[in-house]
Length: 133
Figure 1 (spheres, rainbow, N blue to C red):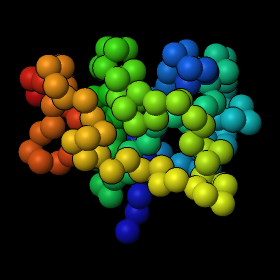
Figure 2: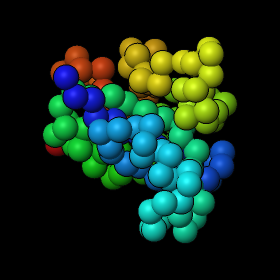
Figure 3: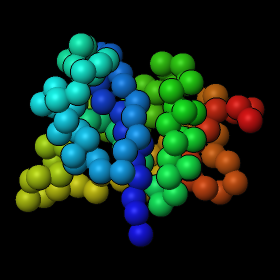
């Protein structure tokens, strides 16, 4: 079974954000870190992996990436803060002896929903904008 990843990179805590999708998270983040591909992340030195979601369906991953890209900044920050409150580089943690699971459990406890502009849809445990579609 293939895995597809939606990920968020930043330049620094509360810095510039980049949302992407890939079928090989380790390779893609390495490319960002080594500045191997010209573009936005290279220009603005965005290379710290701070959020990930794993999917089995490429279309679901692409859809999720597009949704997150359309979110306002405060929603993105809320998502990051709930999943990775210290804004630690998850790429580094993937290679330590005590590596954490870089795919969020996506339980309701990892996504703030109380009185916000985000909600879970269809018991998928994936956060969406209210009334987006």
